[in-house]
Image (cartoon, rainbow, N blue to C red):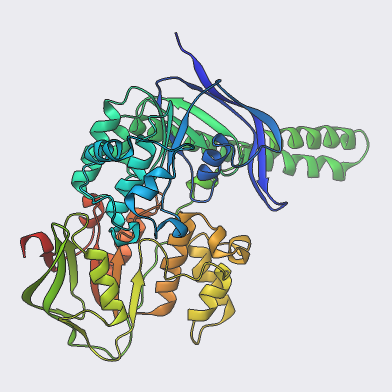
Length: 482
């Protein structure tokens, strides 16, 4: 029996007057189904999760949830206030009452997500990938009827993604996933809830992820062709109506009827979906007057089996050279990148005067209390307002988004803002830590092309092989093999 456990009935919701998210959106969710929630960056996917969790209420319409349905979410990032907790305290927090067999339960669920972690270790001391596994485990330990996963593969290495994929394939309960990892989604998805950023409605599709994406693309193309035909017809009728109107007499009535018909045809035109929008091709200009050696490595500090070790090496990074940094979650890739940026890395020297452009995976290089506009203004040296706004528009950062506080942007929009800042900054050394996290799949080839053509020195960390394949890599440093 197909039991519906959740239903949105004509739900409308907006953040203030200028930011509508949903307009009379309806869909049912069956028990045992595994669904992808899909839509453009900033369309409101995470907002829908907040509404399911009753953290936000609809302005109109209703959300029906089956009685006693337990729901748990693995969010995109661990909140800053929780970073000071120990692993034990972090898991205890997800339960409304004290749990007496907590330690064995934590150990059991950490095994599921393939993570060894001392229970008295602070959350902030784990890598981004390990934190992603802890987030997932904190949802799984609740054994919910409905599991909500918001970008669960972000920061996970290849092994972590494979582990999660296999878990979801065998998962017997209900699951809704937001992710931009197409191959991962295709392995277990049975349908898609498609949030249209233009109409603010939700369309439901059945089938695996790839077939649904193809179906949506065909639909967009059909709508575009319909508009082309209607435009042609409208243009022809307008010419005729103008001709008859000038003739006077009863032909004016004919012209009026024709204009009524033109209005009908205008109404038939389909609103072109903004989903079709991809960021404009862009390039990251390189800092002028730099050349030769940009950075040199004589030793590196790593974590192996939770213990710090120092490894000697001899590696030089010159202008136009791209270095791929490999290694499993928890080995210290993010810590290393951060120490290079801060100038505290023992054994790594960046040439004096080189500007470093840093894409940090959790966006903590951004000032969340600034507006997006202020963030871009701070970095756009010797550039006119018009030029700066043109760069922003290329990354789909319109006037409304520019006025928004960075803390209120979606994770995807923070990523696009970070790339706009790199374009304006013109770095000599580009350091990128998981730059495809949170990115709409349409943007990823455009980003890859820009990085491939970047003419400064570059250090890249990415667990997405399809993305890395599109970028010129001159040297690879595998931390595990050191």
